[in-house]
Length: 171
Image (cartoon, rainbow, N blue to C red; front, side, top):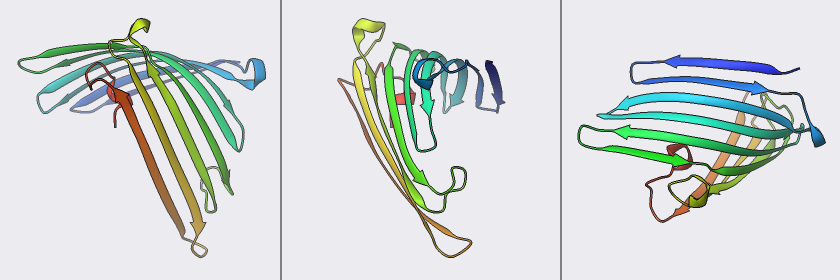
């Protein structure tokens, strides 16, 4: 059957509510997920209110994960003298390969995650952008109780400017 999950986070400067509904697997074992998030943060005189609606298709095995997502972002940033609004409708893809001895607490092996996505102005987005990202982890045991973890990340965003790109897609 389907599952629903919701979270509420409250702190002095940041508040958010998240919800996600996961449906049973469909064709080729992809699992559809639908979610929403509303968040507000007040940092150094800037108040940001964000709304996100999205859907994802995810297929996970022990060694691989493949995900496609489509999200709608609406942000409003306010300071004492300026209000900025943005709308974005990005499409993203992500793939992960892993070969580890334990999925929760790996001590030996590696994982590699590649992501790509972006938005075009013709699809209800204020800014055209392309985002590419890669992350790798290497795990090597150092005796019985310790593990060396080496992590590398690289990524970039190609756009004509920063304005109009949701903060979730910037580095």
